View 1 (cartoon, rainbow, N blue to C red):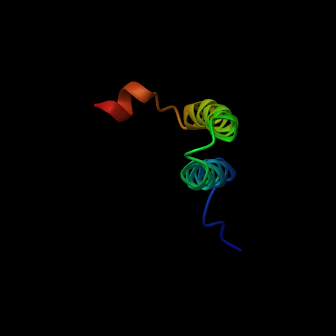
View 2: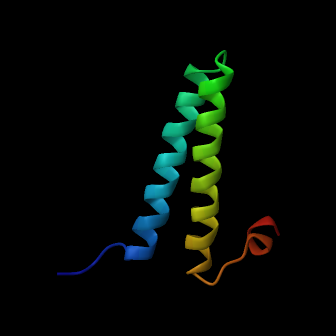
Length: 66
């Protein structure tokens, strides 16, 4: 059976889905500073994890920005 996506690619997609979900929660809690801060914290953790996961593809953020 042929593998369509590598484990690395699935991991990146999963993190992006989590960031998308957190972004939606940030919109819901836009008026609640405490909840907003909690979701911003989660988003920052996911972003750090995303940077590490992208690094597994031998891509740096400098490559993406170019």
